[in-house]
Amino acid sequence: MKGFNSKGFTLLEIIVSLAIMATAVTLLIQLFGGALKSASISKDYNEAVWLAGNILENALNDDDLDVNYKKNGYIDEEHRWEVRALEYLLPEFSQKTETPMKLVKVIAVVWLGGKKIKLSSLKLIKE
Image 1 (cartoon, rainbow, N blue to C red):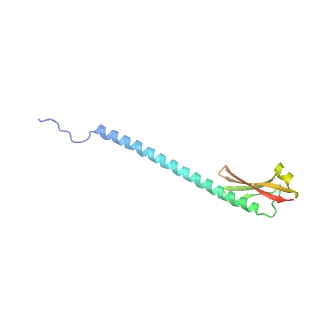
Image 2 (cartoon, one colour):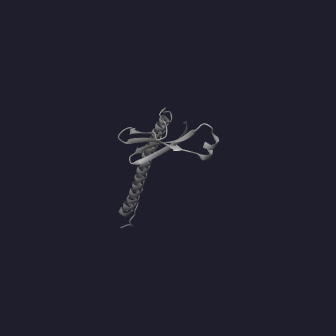
Image 3 (spheres, rainbow, N blue to C red):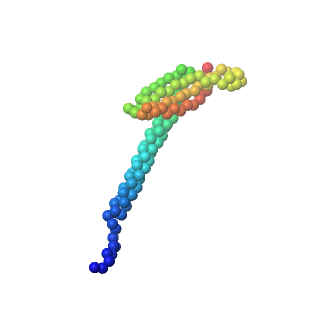
């Protein structure tokens, strides 16, 4: 009987290589799932910022905009919005002007899945 000539892989080598491949594939799937979740969150955030910006611009162009201005509503079942205008006085600004003017801080808030996206702007209003 001649010497035993081994030209293939042993069962142990095959099991170890399959375990390594399974671990690598599992890690890649988890990484891909996390990337999809981050992309979805980013898309929702960008959508909410865009909606808040449009709502804020509409409020700034509203003829009824004054101190204590408040409006709210629903865009869809996921988005609720609110706009508030508050008096915002700069002492050095009010002392230098002859005509009474007020700065109004307008805040647009959009709720998206329990999270708030808040944008704000200032507008000058004559009294």
